[in-house]
Amino acid sequence: MSHNRMKSKRPAKPKAIQPAKPSPSGLLRDLRGLIVAAREQVARAVDAGLVTLYWQVGRRIRQDILKEQRAEYGAKIVPALGTHLSREFGRGFNARNLFRMVRFAEVFPDEEIVSALRTQLGWTHFRMIVPLEDDLQRDFYAEMCRIEKWSTRTLEKKIGGMLYERTALSKKPDKLIRAELAALRDEDKLTPDLVFRDPYVLDFLRLKDTYAEKDLEAAILREVESFILELGVGFAFLERQKRIMVDSEDHYLDLLFYHRHLRRLVAIELKLEAFKPADKGQMELYLRWLDRHERKPGEEAPIGLILCAGQRRETVELLDLEKAGIRVSAYWTDVLPREQLQKKLREAVALARARLAGDQDAKPARRAKKSP
Image 1 (cartoon, rainbow, N blue to C red):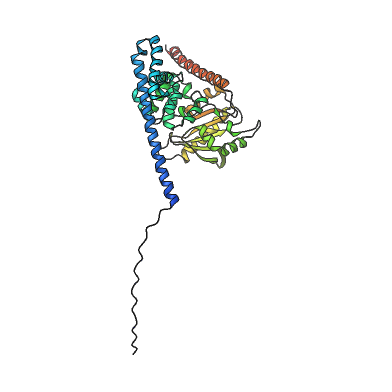
Image 2 (image 1 turned 90 degrees about the horizontal axis):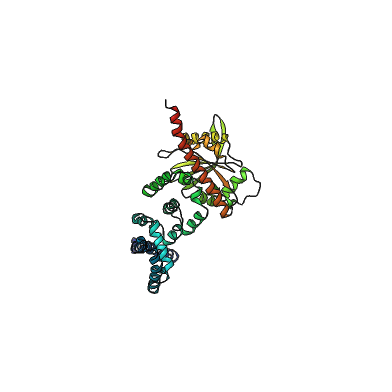
């Protein structure tokens, strides 16, 4: 028998799990993110405080000086106030800016509305909106800026591109415009009249003088980000050349989008010519098919947008397309000079309002003829 004993193997001690060392680059990224987020939050809070301060300053000056019809005294005292205040608090309180604050309090007299807007709009936003002459125009840009969270650069571009005048809303009577803007302010309720516009400016597509429908579609897909920016916030691209089979025949919808705020599919057809009555029948077929086969529970009925090289307004009105859930808009591949753009859009708004007023005046006359 061997004197050497077999040494029993002891189980090895489990190695202590070392905590993973944080990646220097990952840690740096996280810390930078925290600092940037905190700075942005502080900046928003400061900007919101400044908006409230400027409104209160403007209101106080209006109440104490200008509202009492002492215009001559006001013209003298405001520069004097600006001189004293700017010496102590800087150029932000000079006479020019004090008059801006007075105008701010004048065109936005409701403190609750200002308080709601200041969560998204800074003083620079208000400086762009306040000079606008039309109160409906001001309310439109302020509320759309709040809802869609526009930067000051985006707001400047929207105002410069006359977005308000291009909406269907601007062509309605003032009473209806106020009602829709009130619903937007109180309920965050967007309607198709606020979303769709006419015309759409597609100068970013860089199309040549002659092009085919497929070229237009390809250019839109190539610049889909810019196209969605022109459509407006809330649009999400789904498909191109959406196949629709009806009675064993294939049809193809040019572009299919979804609008998050409207909660509905948006079918878009592109036309190189002016609108034709047959375009309505084609779009109706697509909308009914989408409603039956693609609409999800909780969604509104699909809506259609026919983008044409030109409009025939009387044809569009006679076909009463809005009841069928169809919008017709022109598109421009070149931007007009601002003066021409203003003239063209204002003429279109005036014409649409005149026709609406004429239709309303004609209704009582028709009822009177029917009465015995």
